[in-house]
Length: 133
Image 1: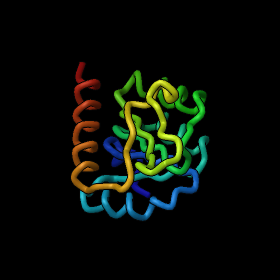
Image 2 (image 1 turned 135 degrees about the vertical axis):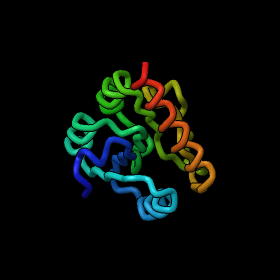
Image 3 (image 1 turned 60 degrees about the vertical axis):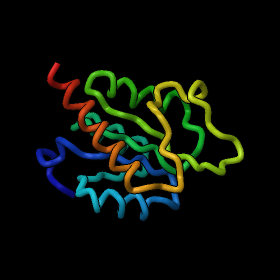
C-alpha cells in the first residue's frame, strides 16, 4: 500500500463481498488510478478520514444502510467525494435514488471502461474544484 502522502488523489472501494472486484481493479489499473480497498466499514471510514478519496465505490450489496452512506456523506460534504453504488442492470429490484440518499449515482454492471473512465475524471475534477473553493 502506498504511503498516505501519495494517496491524496485515490479511489476507495468499500467492498462487501463483490464478485466484481477483480474487474474493477483491472479497469482502474488501465487508468493508472491509485486504489485502496477496504472490506470493513471501520477500515473504509478510517482511510477516508485520513485522506479523503475523490471517488468512493460501494460494492457488494445492493441496499446500503442510510447510516453507512451518511457517514461517508458527512466526509464527502467537506471534501467533495463522489459516492457511487455498484449495481446490476439485471437486479431484481433496481435501486431508486430516493431510497439511497447521499449516493451521487449508480455504477451499473456490466462495467464499461469508457464509462468508468468518465466517472473517474468527473469525480477528480469535482474534488479539485471543491478543494480550491
